[in-house]
Amino acid sequence: MAILKAVRGTRDLLPPETELWNKVEAAARSVFARYGFGEIRTPIFETTELFARGVGEETDIVSKEMYTWEDRGRAESDRGQSLTLRPENTAGVVRAYIEHKLGETGSLQKLFYIGPQFRRERPQRGRYRQFWQIGAEVIGPATSGSESPVRDAEVLEMLATLLDELGITGWRLALNSVGSAADRARYSTALREALAPVKHKMCEDNQRRAETNPLRVLDSKDENDQEIINGLPKIADFLGEDSREHFAQVRAALDACHVRYIIDPRLVRGLDYYTRTTFEFTVPDGSGLGTQNAILGGGRYDGLSEMLGGPKAPGIGFAIGEDRLILTLQAQAAEAHTSKLDAYIAPMGTAQNPAALQLASELRRAGLTVEVGDGSFRLKKSFEAANKVARKIIILGEDEVKSGVFTIKDFAKAEQTKIPHGDLATALKP
Ligand code: HAM
Image 1 (cartoon, rainbow, N blue to C red):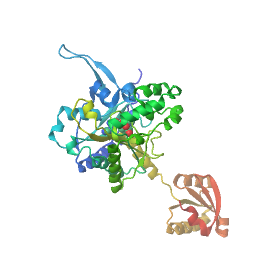
Image 2 (cartoon, rainbow, N blue to C red):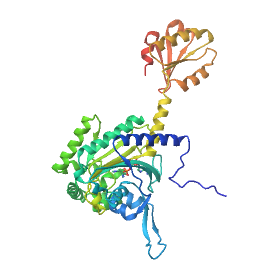
Image 3 (cartoon, rainbow, N blue to C red):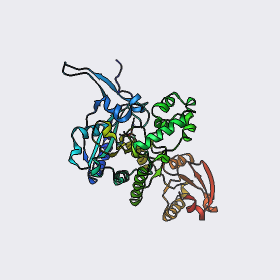
Image 4 (cartoon, helix red, strand yellow):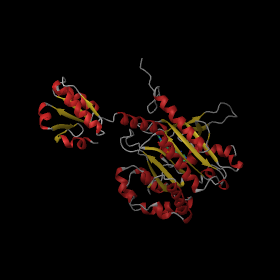
């Protein structure tokens, strides 16, 4: 009988890896508590309409990636309806905010969540059909200060703190402002006009988007269309005075907190609810994620509550891709563990053992990390042993000891050089 396997794009998390997941979640909970966030748990499925209205019909998520089904009614009183496994959690949180009239408390709601999300994407490393997000939303009536640039900066500073506490190295924050709904409408018109004469050269998806939702053209990955996209008008030139001032204040607060960022004018993000501040954190190459290097994304959504039929409730939030965060931590830890010694000294014949130890002592005192082999090893064995633990091997034969000039091989560069004794310590420094 055929063996049954987990569905494509889903995976089992087993010990000891689950220990790392629990550690990450505990670190997030601890940081969130310090910033005054409380936990919210919303259902894993919602009505399809929530995502169609909230995330946007024209987004890739809603148009191609949702797990949607017609749920049959079980009785006359129980109507059938279209339901969807949540592809993200912001729409659900805002729905809950409206449903439980959290706005009527008058205070700012700071809510976090940890849980699985579902998108029918093409699976690859760092991209799954069931994946986990650790996210948070700050939302409330404008009188609660929910619109303040302080909120944006606080969320970003909190994320920088969390990533640093987890030990993620080399992260980069890209920031942009997509303006108010009115700014975006003006920008959309300008994009539509700029696209009209060139769109016939673009892929089918972009031809459609150019008509229906031209902003979405900007996140297109289609190689052939990049030249046209790079030449399109920039959102920064369409921001009204309010949006510009808001963005300036977010940046000033970040500068004051020493959170570093770069401005990326093309960062519009793939969901329709964003207004003003948008952001993404990425990790450098070699962090185990390949092209899926965005470990988290988010932004402001000042009109989302109204799009869902609720009261005015500006908000800002983010979601961390927990699977990607874990992959990064594993890759960066492996990198740290495999950090190699500066040199391995290979004595050629047991007679050279004392000289090898003496040289090791001298180099270690100079601050280098050094391992010593044994004169009984054949050359091949010395090379194999050295390659496992060190970046370079120093061959120490009778001739070398006499002449004071050593042969060094750099494994990564596959390069052999001769270095006089006096220059050795400098030459071995990483
Ligand atoms: P998003 O950019 O669609 O935003 O997703 C946030 C993060 O979830 C991504 O940066 C990525 O790390 C992770 N992610 C997305 N899709 C996958 C996947 N198929 N496999 C693994 N990881 C994935 C949102 O979801 C918004 N709700 C964020 C937000 C909250 N904006 C405001 N508040």
